[in-house]
Length: 255
Ligand code: NDP
Image (tube, rainbow, N blue to C red; front, side, top):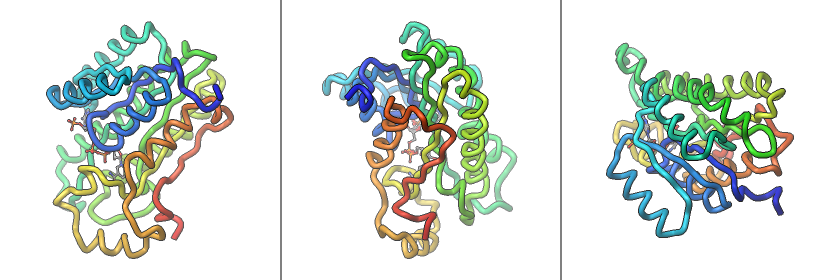
């Protein structure tokens, strides 16, 4: 059963105060991992920490804006201190969507989404590398959260989708580069999941209707349905799996 367990593992999950990240924190901690998570909102994060403590989950928190280089360095310093220089699991989950026609995207929009979704993923992976090398059982595991928007074209989502397509490729690149370090790198690409992102008021309701009509399972997903795949990818049970991008999308991209 140790193959299907995370007992004693240490994990960093970015963006754990809400949505998919929140579910990932609870799933990993529920399997026995010690989890460190971050978001930008101190009050929200502290409220989460209090509730997790009540549930008996081992979670520590840190306020950090993953789009800021210095914040990412500070975050990894707290990870190093909290877990004694060793990290078994890095989940690059924090991200923001932006529904905007391409011709209306400003340079500032472009830089913000690139820094938040993509540069954070690249740089946190770099920063985590020495800690992942020191992981228990030799070599840790990275899981990136991209999106089905990285596979298919969707209107008003160009910049967001570019970051997600690049995360899919970064997953394959790092998987091959770090395989000799025994570090596995995989990616989960969710379809529409019930969170603040999917209830964003700037989404075109016509687009939602059209996409729902061609969604085989005909319903939106729940954050827990993404979290279970993330947990599996981090377990010893997935020890021969690397460089994969797995859609959790109710069949959306296969229709
Ligand atoms: P939510 O908006 O519900 O949660 C996002 C989390 O990330 C929050 O905890 C938020 O906290 C944090 N966050 C956002 N920006 C930053 C930042 N700059 N620095 C640190 N933390 C940040 O989003 P979801 O749970 O829906 O999304 C999670 C991931 O899943 C994203 O990468 C998203 O692209 C992806 N995804 C989501 C889909 C969906 O339908 N929901 C579909 C496909 C992919 P705070 O804002 O307080 O900082």
